[in-house]
Structures are given as structure tokens and as C-alpha cells.
Image (cartoon, rainbow, N blue to C red):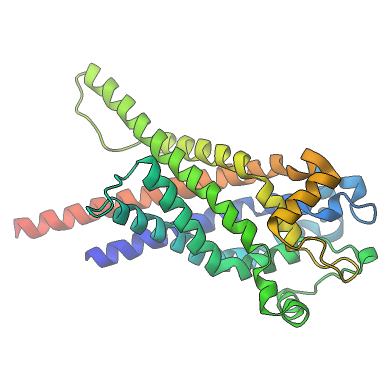
Length: 320
């Protein structure tokens, strides 16, 4: 297996990992998206369900059955592989380039992790924002009293956005997504730092027991490290999630109330207070923490496996 083939497989492993994690957590994604919407707090929409994941879940089940919890799954599956592939590829390339002689920012350093994580988020979101726009629109319950309508399918969503909002409509919420790149940067920073600390602690214990040092993490430590990193990063940057959902809503009475990230955050804060800015965060954390932990663990395991294959192939060539 050539170095190029290994790189392709490593890159794709991020996409595969994201696909597995997203499929398992899609029901939570649907509930969270509706909790973040303005309909969850409007008198004409889901007033009785405001702040209640249980009631929102009941409404979804009553109106759409189990199928309702998997709305938006198809665009998620269509988008997650390119999104995560680009994300991990950009992260790895940025990390290596920053560690090069010209910039001399060692892998694992604060600057390297922040810049690499931010770059990965920018690249991924720019490429896939139209997919997530379609996904969010079809997951939200339509408020007919405000002139919104229920979409009949993905073709209807795409056609309606194009006719009514133009190409720019597919990029609604991208400013909030860019701000959300700070979440990825913080996540990678914590992940790299904690991973390094765990390995140092493990090798200190190995030395005490007279065992050789190791460069391999246990699967449990990788899972817990990824979960911790995602949890902290998600809480710190959460308001951008609410702003992004609001920006992607249908117009109410023909008017888009939310016109930009900061305007959306300011309006939500003014009308709904802190609770509005953190609407749905509990469900969000239930979704993204296991999602991210599964994704990072899968990515690391696949990378380790591919690295082992590469070493064995090199050893075989040497023997020959």
C-alpha cells in the first residue's frame, strides 16, 4: 500500500466515523433543532413544548411516527462523508504544515491545534453548508399560522429555497457556522492536550512498574478524551447553534426576522434571555458528545490500523 493510498484511507476514515455516529444520534438532532427554533417559543407554534424535549419528541412521534426522528438523515448521510473527510484532511495537512521548518509550530502546541481546528472547520462548512441548510429546513415543524408550509420532500425543499431565496438561500447561517469553527478549534486543542497528558501519565506508571513506554492510547481513554473535549467546546460556543437554526428558518409572514449571526443572537437575548440562547443545549450535548467520541475513536482506531499495515509492508520489503 502506497503512502498516497494510506492518506486517502485515513482521510476517508473520518467520513466513515462521522457517518456511523450521525446515524446513531439523528433522533436527538431532530429534537434539538426544533428546540432551537423560534416556533418553540412563539405563541402560534410549539408554545406548550417550549423547553421540553419530551413534549417535542411526543409531537414528532404523534404526527410522523418513528420516521419523524430520522428526518434530515439522507442529507446528513450525503454530507457527512465529504464534510468529515474535508475536515480531517484539512486538519492533518494544516497540522503538518504548521509544524514545518518555516512556521515551527509543533504538533500538539496551542497555536497549531487552534489554527488547524479552525482551518478544518472553515473548509468543511464552506463546502457543505447547502446540505445542512436543506437538512435543517426539513427537520423544523412548519408554523402554518405564520405563513410557513410543510415541505413534501427534499426536492420540494431545494426547489423552494432556490425559487424564493436564490443561491444565497443555501448559505443562510454560514456566518454562524464560521463562528462555530471556534468550537472545533477549542475541541482539538483540548483533545490534543489531554491526549498528551494521559499518555505521559500512562508512561510514568509504566516506568514505575518497570514496563516499556508506549505510544498507544487505550480505546477507553480516546473515547473519554474526545467526549470531554467536545463537551467543553460545545458549552463555550453554544449560542451560535441557536443563531444558525434561526437563520435557516422559513420566513414568518414573508419576512426573515433573523438576518445575521450577531443580530440573531442579540434578538434572541433581548426577547428570550439566556434561556433562549441555550435552548436545547441539554439535548445537543446528549447528541454531540457521544457522536464526537464515536467519531474520534473510530478515526484513531482506523489510523492506528492503517499505520500497522504500513509498518508491516515496509518490514516485508526490507526482508526481501
